[in-house]
Length: 531
Ligand code: SF4
Image 1 (cartoon, rainbow, N blue to C red):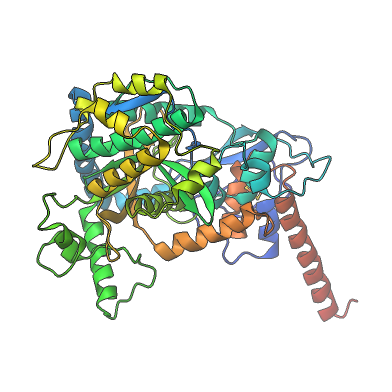
Image 2: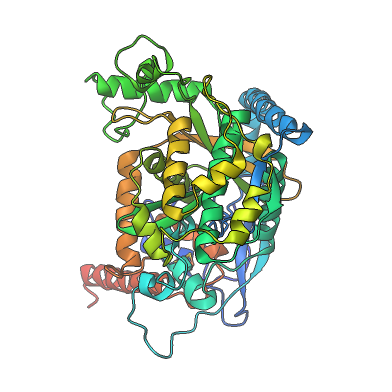
C-alpha cells in the first residue's frame, strides 16, 4: 500500500487501522512513522484515508452538562414504541449483516489489502510552549472549585492520547467542538427525545439546580421500569476520592447480544466454582447463571422472592457513537476509550444502586447546603407537573404517590438524595454477590450523516481493568506522573492529530530513533574496522 503526501523520507507500508502494527519496527520505520510534513507545508498534516476500517478519533462528547432547566418525563406515545421497536429491529438487522459478513469475508479481506489510499487534509493547530510554566496539576488547574468537577469524559478521553487531551485543555479549556461532535450531539438529542419529553422548570438556587438533576435521575429510573428503556441517565459518584459525573446514553432491559452474555456468565460461573478456566479479572458483583434461573441458591434474585416486589430485571448499558465512516472501528486501541467509558458508567451506576456514594462529598464539591429547603419557585414549578406519564408503581399493594405530596416530602437535597437511592433500590438489585446490571457492555455505532446503525461491539466488564486504568489516570490528574503520548504501536494516531506539528512527544520519539540509528551505524562501521 502506498502512502501519499509530504513525508521526510519514504514511509513504510502502514495500515493505520491495524492496532497491532509496529510491534517489531526497526529504528528507520519508527522515525518515518513519527515524522512530520516538511516545512514547506507547515499547517497541513497528511491523513490516510482507507476505504475499509477507517481510523477516526472516537467522539466522546462532554458529558458533564446535565439537564438543569427542565424535567424529563417518559414519552408514552408512538415515538417510544418506535424506539423500542428500533432496539429489536437493530438486533435483527445486525444478525442479517453478520450472516452476510460470513459469506463476504474473503472478498472484503482482498479489498482491504488493495484499498486505494487517498490523502485528506486536516487543519493543524500549533502547540505553543507556555510563556510562564504553570506547575499546578491538571486537577488543580482545570477541575477544582469553582470549576466543574471531573467527568467520565475527562477520565476516558486520555485513553486515546493523554498528551492530546492535555493540549486540548491548555489550548481551549476543553475538547474543541468539531462539526462531527455537533452532529453527534444532534443524533443523541433525537434519540433522547424518542423516550422523553421535557418540561421547563424554573430554578432559583444552587440547591434547586442539583435537586432538578436528582429528580431527572428518579424520573429516568421510573421511565426505565415503566417502558423498559431510558436514555441520558445521569450518574454521580466518587472515584479515587474525586467527584465524577457522567451521563449514560442508554439503559434498557433489552439484551444486545445473548450469545456473548451467555459466554460471559459461563466464564464467571467457572471462575466462581473454582473451575480450571479461571477469569481473574471478572467483577466481584458478577451475576451467575443462578441469577437468571431461579432455584440456584442464595442469589440476588432469590433474595427478592418472598417480598411484594418483582425481582428487578437485568439492565444493559449501551453507548451510542457516531462515525463519519461506514465501518466499525477495529477492536484494540481504537476501542479503548469507549470500553473504559462504559466500564466506568457501570461502576458508577453500581455504586449508586449499592448506596455506596458519599452524598456529603458531592454536596461539598458543589458548595451546597443539604438541609436547605428548595426555593418556593422550584417547588411550585415541580408541583405543577403531571408525573403520571412516567409515574409507575411496581408494588401491587401500594398506590402511586401523589406528585405534590412527593415534592413536598423531599424538599431538601439530603432527603431527595435518600429518595433517589430508594428509587435505585427498586430498579437495580445489588448484593455482595451479584448485581442486576449485566456485565455485557455495548457500543452502538451510528452514521453521523443520518443516524443509521453501522453495527455494535459488545465486551465484558472487567473490574480489575477499570480499577487499574482509573488509578493510573487519577495519578496524572493529580500531577503525580508525567503526561504520556502514544506508544509506537499507536503512532497512526499522530497522523490524524491536530497537535501533531510541534508535539514534544512525537518530536522526541523521532529524535530517539535518529540517535539510535546513528549509534547503530557507528557500531556497524566499527565492526567493519572503519573507525
Ligand atoms: S501527535 Fe501523537 S503523541 Fe502528540 S498529541 Fe497527537 S496523538 Fe498524541
